[in-house]
Image 1: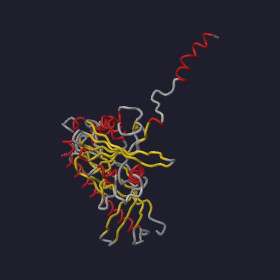
Image 2: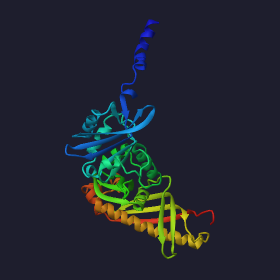
Image 3: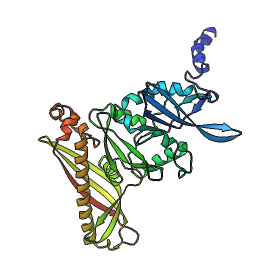
Image 4: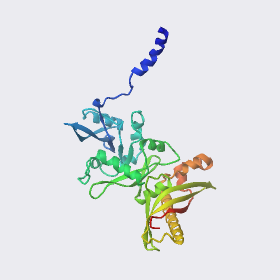
Amino acid sequence: MKKRFLAYIPLLAILLGGCWDEAQYKDITIVPVMGLTKNDEGVKALFTFPTFVNGQINYSKSEGKGISTRDARDDANHRTMEALDLSHLEVLLISSDIAKQDVYEPLDAFFRSPRNRITSYLAVVEGDMEQYFNPSGEVKTEVAIFYPELLRTAVLYTYVAENTLGETAILLLDDSMDLSLPYMILNEMGVPTIEGIALFSNKKFTGKVFKKQEAVLASVMKKKLGKYTRLSFDWKEKNTPITIEVINAHRKINISNDKVELSYTIDIDVAEFPKIDLYEKKVRKEAEKFLASELKGEFEKIIKTTQEAKSDIIGIGRKVHAFHQDLWKRGDWHETYATLPIDVKVKVNMKRTNIIN
């Protein structure tokens, strides 16, 4: 009996020992939104976090400066009542000047601790970071609530592809595919607005941005669709607009003789077409042909821009790296991608029209 009890002692020690990384809420302050920008010392970090006063939730802000992200966070801890905790971070904003350098360096601290949340959203912002933490009166809610909901909506409607901290780390360490992140500006009323997606090359923001519909098209090319993916075109021959919703996007990458062929089959639903004659098979075929032509042209523009930026956000390099080592070993992939002949083919299948047709 005594021997059996002694055998249970190591198990009891494990069960009663508690969590090695336990942090009491009374000792920490949860930070939902953080911003990183440059300053004379190196990095300036801004934080917003909830505080409880007389049973009500208010939001406070703090900032810190240092030679690195971790150093700036420690500096900010000197001015808060509890230690700033990033385990529930929802959004990290990165200034464009930091993003134009090696963006992995300021992000490294987030990947060192298992307590950090890797599902946080990232976004590149243009302009003064402090204005994003103190926006104009047109923003009717706290930034700690505003930014997570803004980015969730953008992902839902495919305005941007979902890039979390974890996914960003994978792409930053992947030589065969480049990163793209949501790009945010302040509009004429001072309201933070998602303008499109920022293109990266070799871990650095290139300064090139896909705006509005271009950003949606780039997500279609990557096959990263949100719940809703809508595109609008002006069908001049019919003197009418047509809006479609992408149901699915199928892609094939064929590589031969150092040339790339991207073949897309796009399944769509018609969301808007005032001419209301899609019940005619001839009109449907005409619409499919028109949309295929428009999408092909738009895809070719996107390829041209990414090649100019030396930014393979489409992921062609992954296929080359896996199956075409002779092409991959020709040199730096970014330089190879910039001059690679790429042909695009598009087929559109109209799966649904509307309740009238």
